[in-house]
Image (tube, rainbow over all chains, first blue to last red):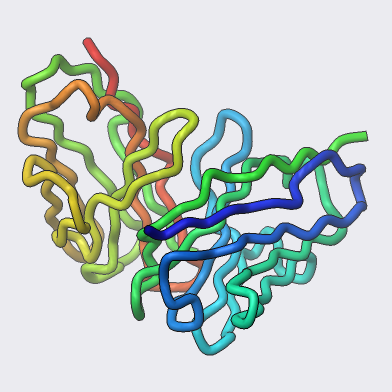
Length: 118
Length: 107
């Protein structure tokens, strides 16, 4: 059974930093791309970033230069480093597994809440 | 960035009725479009990928069609558990984008 467990969310001041982690199990982690999707309060889904199985990365324009996605295949874990946080980054952040060679999400975590506020 | 526009924003229907949801892209995405179902407090669920392929375990009452810029998700006969939010998502171009969602509510 595929499981994705996010951690690291919480309250942070504007301009601050946070690192989210997502521990994966139930599949061969190194074979799949992983992605982060967020949902701000009362809003729809917004794609944030993706890291491919071979380590290539992509970012939404809204986070480019501030967020960094990375992975540690030895720990079956994907990370999202977030710097220069803004109020508009407040959201539930979902870690998700992509389908083989396709940038669609077939499994999602339960999400972790990030609140950027003073 | 490819903008996906979903319509209607809200669809009010009764169980057993047919639901037709639309997703229009600001430029062609070929067949590179997916549909997700999202219920409050739960993780989203992939329903359809590449416009018309049902994901694993998805009931046959869900079907997708379309190509280019116009896509449709059809639920042939609504079950009580189908009342939820539905999003489309394209993978044709970076950045990946989602539509703003259609809420299917009980009439």
